[in-house]
Length: 331
Image 1 (cartoon, rainbow, N blue to C red):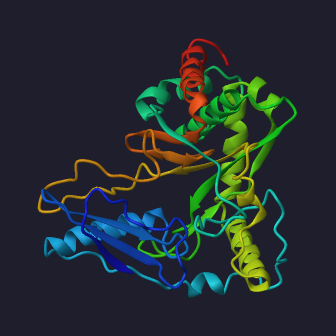
Image 2: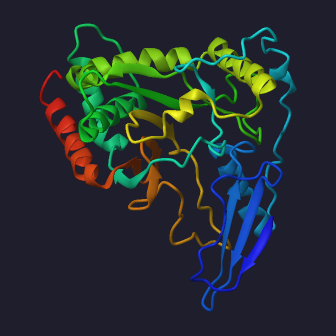
């Protein structure tokens, strides 16, 4: 769908839920000084990796430069799926990332905030935690970042001690199963959730929580685990249609206590057009803009997360304390 808005002050009417029959939506907003184009691609059609490839190909095409042709072949994976998989998906199992599947109601929107959890800020902490442990169990920088975010989220939300909170993360399955790195489409799944009582997240050391998450991450990216998730989802869609799975329902509601983490740090969504980059790239991951509570993404400029407006200060404070205290103690 293509449309044109004559007044640059007008908010384009691009829907949050994209009609599956219209997976690509572009709006040209004309202005006296400059025009802008707003593009929405259905998550059912393309994930963040593909969105980045699309923008880069667009810039190359505009500059009359060649760009890599995408591939669309999903058949090698289809042949590996379990045709006897159950269509029932339990609350904590993994599922396909398809953010535009219709929920039962509107999401509980919070406010987007950005915190510095970069490699420069976390690597010294990660090394100190590993070196300070008698059992040399390693964990990645990304896993440590997830642990810090989870602890800060639980503290800022002031969850009850026995309330169950959980963490899941997006997985790019390219090259982990027979899908090439050039595949254009939705090749993202969400891991099975790691559930813990809020008290456990609060009292567990940052190192122990990172080690627990590392084991779960390692299991989730295995070929066996990925094919199991894809098999379950294919069976569920065949039986029920593209309905929202129970896990995503837990992202909505006033007691939302689930975190969904993704890493966008490797995506360049601002390539140069005629040698010039845009002054800003706007997305749902922006400081001060509405963002579903518990959705977080590690971007090149920082980690973005949605929390309630009154929780912003506490979240930032807890993140800072965790890093400062853990660098000087065997946390």
